[in-house]
Image (tube, rainbow, N blue to C red):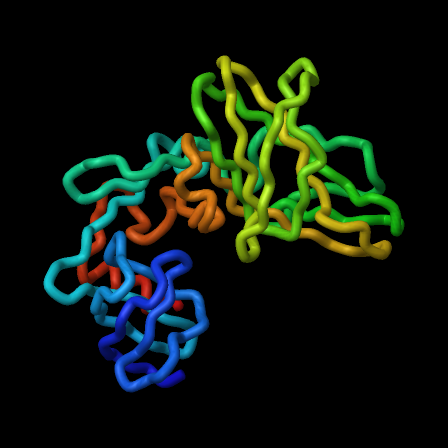
Length: 253
């Protein structure tokens, strides 16, 4: 794909797909969106480059600037996605989305669960062809809400329980490369979600888990959580998506 700025039409809102002017079909590729909510038939300005597609503007309006911010120390607090006027759009309840959250490695299955060399991912390695290793993720959550948990990786759910091991019902789906789990809590409680290798594979099989997202509500479940955290561009908290935002994102590709 050549490095080009052009116009296109939105053909699908979720996941986002566009048809470039002059083409007969939509591009079947992941499309990064810097302008906020889009609908089918919206006219958008796009940047086509060797590594992907970026929607940078919408005809008849301006992009909705977004603020990605940690609510405290980076990778040690919740993070939010806001519009420039301060309206909170989404909140990632996970204090550390890099799979360094408080975890208890469990013994069912055979293998190891270790952090990657840079400490940002969890690597599950099977040692036999039996069921692979798993990890328990614990979250203290408020009752009276539905929650959506998602993460990156070819993982499966072994179970969801209260801290005292009472089972909690859940619905699990796979959206692209993200595992999505939706459940509802009646009362304030600490939940224990057991995530393991998604399939029984040969010895030496490796599953990498990353980018945890826990949100109140289920409106984003159908798009795999659409991951975000406070470290996204703009890299510093409380900056907004300006021209410099776009330039920084392009430069990082």
